[in-house]
Amino acid sequence: MLAGGISDVRKIGVLAEAFDRQITPHVAIEEPLGAIAALHLVASWPRGNLLELDHDPPICDYSKRFAIFRNAPVVDQEGYISVPQGPGLGVEINPDLVVA
Image 1 (cartoon, rainbow, N blue to C red):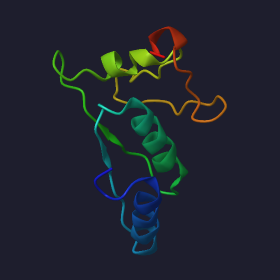
Image 2: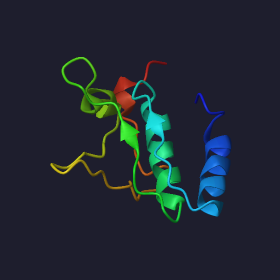
Image 3: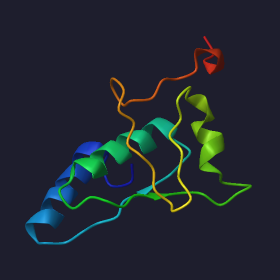
Image 4: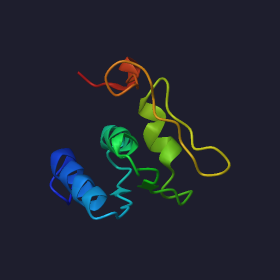
């Protein structure tokens, strides 16, 4: 978000690739949908394999923020997270948690 959003970060990734550099974006977990979108973005880069995700329990625990999803992705023991494969961003918001 601080770099101008997904479109601008994509441009940064393209420039990094053109100059044979790898970048590692940082994602604020306060925006769980933004984190999932950034995960998809990084996965789309030829050299994209790293995304920094806040996780410092108990105060900043990604799993608490991802609890809004019915099918929340999970970081494995080695620190990897699989890119959700469903429609759209691949995650489904739990409708019980949506306030009308």
